[in-house]
Image 1 (cartoon, rainbow, N blue to C red):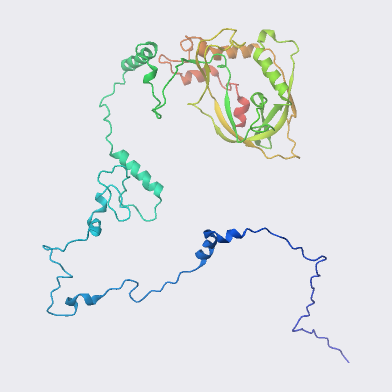
Image 2 (cartoon, rainbow, N blue to C red; image 1 turned 180 degrees about the vertical axis):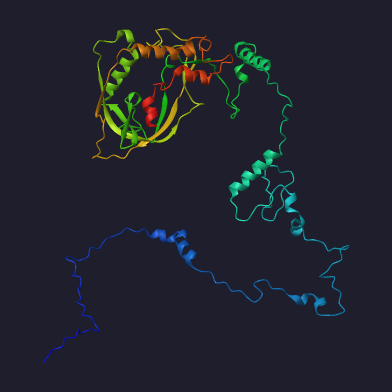
Length: 427
């Protein structure tokens, strides 16, 4: 005898209830203070009024009843239709309230307000632009009106002939020197700001190249936030003497940012740098430790910055420093060009990352410049200190332009300027 087993399909599954147990303590009654006067304010019912739909009862005439029984000409055959079609030579009198409907809106410079025509003598209203599309932003409408008014103004005619010859250029250059050097032709009260006419000049400065820092190369770095661990409203003397060290890790180029440990070390380092002359350096100079704060990566790099300069306004009372040889310089504005501009942002920190050449502390000291460094510095300073600098160079033609072919032959293959090679390789 064989036993046959079959699966029993249940039509109704058994469900077991799992009631929530009662709370262990009775519910706590909270007393919420309520000011009954808030129900008496008119704005209390605004929400209810906004949610209440208004009944719209529309009749067969859509709310505009038209009684055709007033015109007998519609019902009779021999009745004149002068009431519906008046004689053009004998028009009925128009109600004064409806006279503005006969005006041409495009012919008026001011808009109508509440069915009232504008005053003819009013000139303070803004003209409406013609052919304004539907659902267009008002800011574009006002901009078009300004452009239309500007284009409608009469433009000054340009001179037909401009003399660009060499003699004319020399004449204009000499005239500019005469206007600046001749007290009878130079007047500060006549100078105005090109965009702000109310701003006038109060003092003038002569412009000179800054020979103290002309041999140095300056790059402008912009951070998305101020480096350091101090609040933004607290002055940090360590920032203006920080160190940026180019680094590389697995093909990724970035900059390591170093700061001194405390403010006293930064102030001492800047004071020693300001007052240290090459001839007075010690045999064992004192070192200053700069600690790694964090790494930054570049976001944007501008290799050429032709229109931005470092400008120092000197009123003539600045104490002479060591780099200038102890000589006082004249009152004026001293400039130095900027080589590059870079925008930096914080690099994501990886605790387990260990790249080659990572330094936690950098010790900086001042040492004597080598003979090659002094020669390179003197050559760069000759651009602004030697009046015959351009004439003494063999790679400059008669007009003062550099001969690129001669420069390439003089430098030779494989030779280039070593200043900033590390930064050039990275960026």
